[in-house]
Length: 400
Image (tube, rainbow, N blue to C red):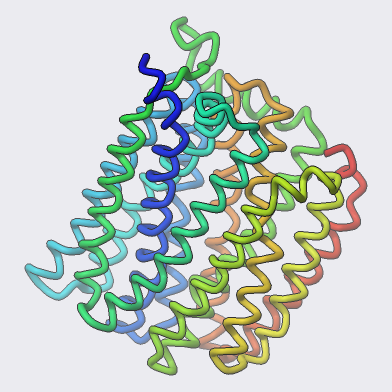
């Protein structure tokens, strides 16, 4: 195994991480915009956002088991290659005929089948790549999530620019190329992966998954952490997949939407890169509570639907506060779970995270059409504040 290739493993992982982040950021802004442009219906946008979340519920646990048995690199590279092909369907569809809602939904859901696999596999690769580069895991987690957030920062802005000057077809074409880059970058890594000790035995696959559930249930602090993440995700995802696109589409301001989403991502970038220093000075349980409180406080004033500049400033502060969360999440799993079992734990957590948003997205889309954007947004933010207060008060998190 080449020493140079070993040392470059973390850099190659970040090339894939950044490419995937940009791709997902472009898709996240382009698909809702396309639906609203073609149908003019927030309820349909909410329905599609919910449908896109569904594959992750069922795919993530299976992917987690595959990561532990087949290998992290193989799962990540294959998933990005399939994501590339799924996005190309949008390009072909637009060239052949104008896509209607049914085809948009089918292609979007198909792409969502592959995305959780790549994201989860790259998370599981962090300790391997960090060890090859001689980097401590806290710093590696911060940098990994920081680079992914850089992608999310660039992606919405790039997507908005493509919509403005070349239409959705240009956005989808660029996205497919970036997924291809991600696949080749991960496949070229040279690392030593740790797999489940039963990966060459006849242990039934579903029994391995059941073992992952048992591990999560047996760790009360980690289970509480996971359930809190699930509820927060269920409340937040309708905001940036339904509420924000509806607001800015009603203003015919694609650039404004891109600026706001990029501002969130910029804040997350700074917060994620700061995680290593924060983790060295602040207990995990205290840092988690600060993340939840500060991000919620910054999010609440958005209910007044201020101008784009104020909206972007609040989004930046929200991202800054939330930035340390993902590297904190990675570190908690890495320190509490055996390396050969981490893939299935990440997969189970991702499944729960995907399970929460669909109901919220459906209800929010319906609520906007029935009661208006401002009233629906205010209700969602009220529930968000109540959830944040509950999470902060949970004593079981002290064990983190």
